[in-house]
Image (tube, rainbow, N blue to C red):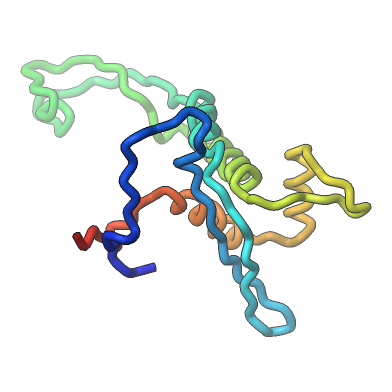
Length: 173
């Protein structure tokens, strides 16, 4: 949290042993709530385990933009960038297509939900106290608890930051 990395923060690794969970990162997400005008933080345990595989799986399912044909003139920005001498018809991805943008937003939303469900290191229970394993039911529980977009985003960012070296925390050795 703002301090630089020092030698005591570093563990040298010379052997990677199968079965070890060396890269598993755990921590907490601190989520703000307000009860009767009083601010409070919830301390939720989080983990990085399985997030990389989850993101890779979602990357394979990511929507692709449609392709459109356009005429590129040699004196246009694009024509100069690719060194055209004469006008040509080229195929380009249409990243402004409304249907594509809608599908992309839905895909990113689903990825965020999956990251929260897999990154929270908690047990979900239903009203009768039984452990919940179904992701749709877990999402339903979070929605019923009133989780806001800001709280949701805080958890996602904290999960991502478990394994990310922050630039402001430079190496001091």
